[in-house]
Length: 301
Image (cartoon, rainbow, N blue to C red):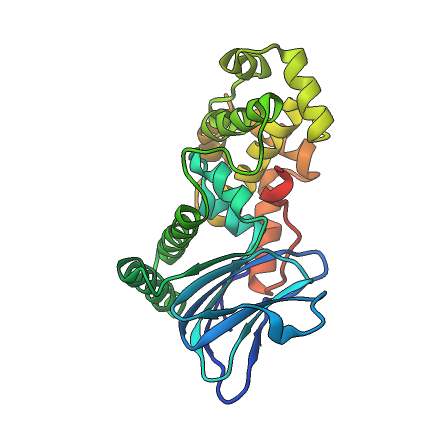
C-alpha cells in the first residue's frame, strides 16, 4: 500500500487465486474510510455478525464501494479480481468534502456502506476509472500540488456515490420540523462559518430564536450551537495547518478572524496548543511518519 501522506493511502488490488480481505491502515485512536473500485471480478461486503460469509451479496465488477471505519464490516475481493483501494482518514476526508452545502449530504451518506454497481452505467464507469487512474498516478509522484489533484478526484468519486444513493433535493435520513431546522443549520454552518456568523445570525436566517436553536442542538446533538460552529472552524483550521503552506496570518484571515492573535487564542483553547506548535508537531509526525489522532467530521450526526 502506497502512503501518499499520513492521511491518504493507495493500493492496487490483485486477489490472485484466493479471496483477499481489503485492509485499511490501523491505529487504535484513528479512523479510516475505505473506497474500493472493483475493476474486474467481484467483491462482497462482509459483516462480523454473518454466520455464513458466502451469504453476502456479490457485487460484480465494475463497481465502486465506500466503507466507513467499522470493525464489524470488511470488503472481500473475490479470487481472480482486481481493482484499487484508497484509505482516507478523518482529517483528509474533511478536506476532501470542503465546505460547500453538498458536504452535509455527503457526511450523512458516509455513515453507512455504499455500493455503486456500474455495469449499466458505462459513462459513469469511465469517469470513475479515469479518477482512480489519476489518483494512482499522483500517488506515485512527488510533484507539487499532487494532494490537490488527489482530493479533487476523491471528491468526484464521492459525488458519484452520492448521486446514486440520494435524491439531492431531499433531506436524507431525517424528517420532521425539528430535524429540518437542524439540517438547515448544518448547511448554513458549512456556508458561513468562515464569515464568523454569530448564533443570532443563524437563528435569524432559520426564522427561529437563539433559545429554540440552543434547545434543539443540546437535546439532539449534545452541544450548543456555538460549540458546533467552533468545532467546524477548528476542524478547518487543523486541515489548513497540516495541508497548506498558508501562514498563520493568512489562515486567520481566511477563517474570518480579525487578527492572528485572536485566531491563536481560539485554536489554543480548543486544541490545547497554539497553531504554530500544532503545525510543527504535525510536521514531525509526517516525517516519522506516525498517524495522529484527529477530530472527526462525523461528529456532526
